[in-house]
Image 1 (cartoon, rainbow, N blue to C red):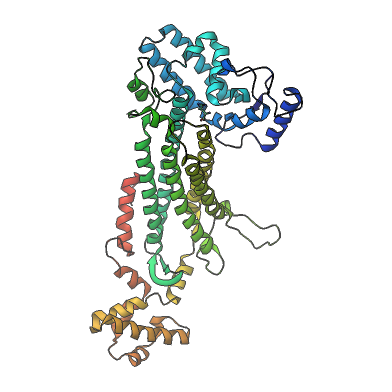
Image 2 (cartoon, rainbow, N blue to C red; image 1 turned 180 degrees about the vertical axis):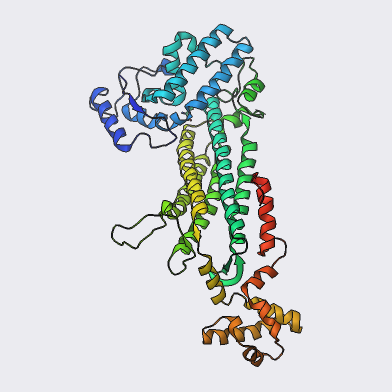
Length: 506
Ligand code: ARG
């Protein structure tokens, strides 16, 4: 007796809700196990591996064992891997061409059905690999049994999951390119817009908004390189490693690897079926990138708050309050910040799952997929939301400039001027400048609003041309060292970035 649940194929690990699963267990208990979910079923030993079993699993065993609720997300990769395997079996004369075409035709039909209708979940069939094979058997008959020659679910799942993670890496790169493009476009717009730069979240020195945005461009460039590195390491094919030791059949591992877009076959069968570092590499890159996204989100949240007022987030990425009509909440940015916690949690979850496992495969490894699927979903959404926010946020440049001017952000420029123009040692210049800031503070004015008489009273060596150094524009223009905040330096970097991203030059 099997109970089928029709559900859509998606990467979401919570395809079967808690309620659904409890209901299913109760149904099983009532109909299959005569009221006791812990009892063995006195029938139906598993058709795939049940040859040496007298009785079937208990309802609880079926439930804890079943990965189909989440690993059905691998159906495309599973069928792709099987098509490559079956073509190789025929090319090597391990099965006939005719058998291979019957199997391939059947596999393509299974794919078409899954794409159209989703997957009928059957916990007796445990996982996606057995679902595909069972449906193939219904379609093609006993010849389907030849597909699993020289293969085990252990090399099969390692291959499927690598293919899935490889797609996720490619998708991450494509999404990061979109985010970088949005940052570069906004940075060009604001290459010369002045804002306070902070250390300790205290006004430090004026910077350009373009420079600040390009800081994130650089972080995301490194994130892309992490995904690219991870992809290179991932791109070896485990298929043909079989259960753990390889196989005695005369298979062609180079052929299957090439067909599936891998650079070649993995070199040790034990390693191939039992490591999941490719998934950890993906999670690590995603976690590091989500950390960058979270910092940008955090800045947007602060900047959008009324005391700052640096930005107005677009309506399309804000929500209102049901009680306070004036509210415009930065929910999307807060959720990007929140999701980072869950993504980092996924990395931890899989590391801890893997850390104590002896070689080769252990069933713990079935738990590798939910954290990766969950992280991928959250990460994809976070990248898309951040790209939208960067593209559509209004920067209140007047307010930013005002904050830079009022925060004594050019104090370092005054000290530097004293060093350069009056040959005063920096420590002494620092002290003189401190006195000028104190005076301006007591007046409630900016540094360049102090008169020359007032400045000369603090130090007689100060002359009129000091005012050129005290404006925020002069300050940022002077910081033109390589990688500095000067508008020209920002423009130089955005021009390079445009070329790298294939954007039109400005
Ligand atoms: N569903 C299993 C997983 O995801 C497939 C591999 C099963 N192998 C085994 N020896 N039981 O890990």
